[in-house]
Each structure stands twice: as C-alpha cells, then as structure tokens.
Image 1 (cartoon, one colour):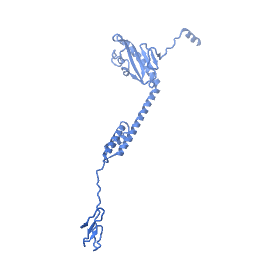
Image 2 (cartoon, one colour; image 1 turned 60 degrees about the vertical axis):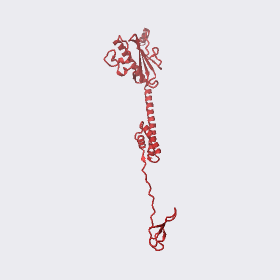
Image 3 (cartoon, one colour; image 1 turned 90 degrees about the vertical axis):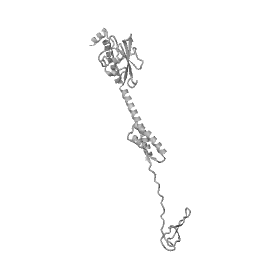
Image 4 (cartoon, one colour; image 1 turned 30 degrees about the horizontal axis):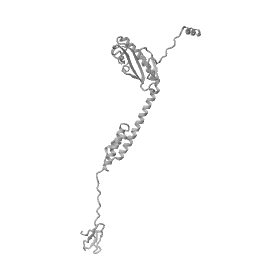
Length: 276
C-alpha cells in the first residue's frame, strides 16, 4: 500500500486504492470508485516503558522487626535509629526505594517500646524503694545485731592477738587460718574493708598507738539510702556500747541503743517483798 500524503500533525493520512489507484483516506475500508475492499492500517499502540521495580529498604525491614518483635530497649532504640535512616534513604532515592510504611511502623513501635521500658523501669524502682522503706525496722534491727557481732569479734581478736590489739582492718576478722591475718571470727561478707548488709554499710576506723598496736576503734553503721533503707545511724567503740543518732553526726556522746536498767537499791527490794 502506498501513501499519497502524510499530512501535518492532526491531518488525515491518504492512501491509494489497490485497484483503481484513486486517492482515499486511510480509514476507508471500501473504495467508493471501484468498490474494492481496502486494507485499513491498525493504529499503533504505544508500548509502556516498564522500569525496574523499587527496592525495599533493608533498614526499614530491620526497623519493623526490632520495633514489633523485639519491642523493648535496646531493640526499641535500634528500631528508631534504623527507621530514621530508612526514611532518609527513601527520600534520597526519589522513588527507586520502597519501604516507607515499614519504616514509619518501626519508628512508632520503637518509640512505644522506649516509653513502655521507661515506665516499667520506673515502676520497679518505686516498688523497690517502697519495699525497702517498709522494711526499715527490720534493717535497723539487723544492723544492731551486726554491730553486736562485730563487738564480740573485735574483742576476741584483741585477746587472740595481744601484740596487735584490735585489727587494723575488718578483713583480718574473716575466714582463714585463725591467725592474726585471718582470725576466722566473722563470715566473709562482713570481712571487707567496707561491708554492707541489709541496707546498711559499715565503716571501721582503728586508733593506732605507736607503730601497729591498736588500742581503740570506732565502727559506724550508716543506711545506704537514708530514709529508705534506714533512718538511724549506729556507733560502736571499744567501750562496747552501741549508740544511735538520726544523722551522720554520731559519736561516743550519742544516745545508747539499749538503755541500762536503773539499779535497784535495798529499799526497792524491801518494797517488792512487802507487796508480795
């Protein structure tokens, strides 16, 4: 088929009849001059250009996994970081990278996980503080008993090691061979430079006369968290009297824990016999 005229844009194309060579429009199926059927050209359809599919961001996938499956710190922090990095990569990719929805979901779940972790940690902290505060009398009674244990051990050490006197450190009271370096008088957790037990910490200060001979000492029991693990401070020296105070200003003039009972005279005993 020969085209007689191509025409300008928007103009109808012309063709010649295959029989009589007459000029016909290209869409005419039958020649009006000779009646012969004419081929009609099919309109060319533009083939769409298919590009490569966008690649899913691995950071977005990792953010979603950390935010949903591992929804507590530190995974929540990783979900937030990876989510922000994924959104930045997707924005720079200009349509060549997918996964924005997963990155946003990972971000949201990450922030929720961080919030839940903070609330959970705060609840545990408050519970522990309240538990310790409720057990203040028990902690203080245990501290007094520990002071009595130290008093007996220190005096026994002074008898065992007369050349040394009292020990230069509480470590010397701990388990060992039973000599002056390890007197085997207290358990291991009390034989430390600064032992702690049931909310109280114990500080030992020896008084050295001469080179090594220790003639006096002072032992102070302080609450680890004043007001929560204990409200009283306790003091013990070589006199054997345990004293107490409501602050760290405590010493040999503080009030004793166990007030001595008043001595009874002969008149008091006689009155009791008469009452009986």
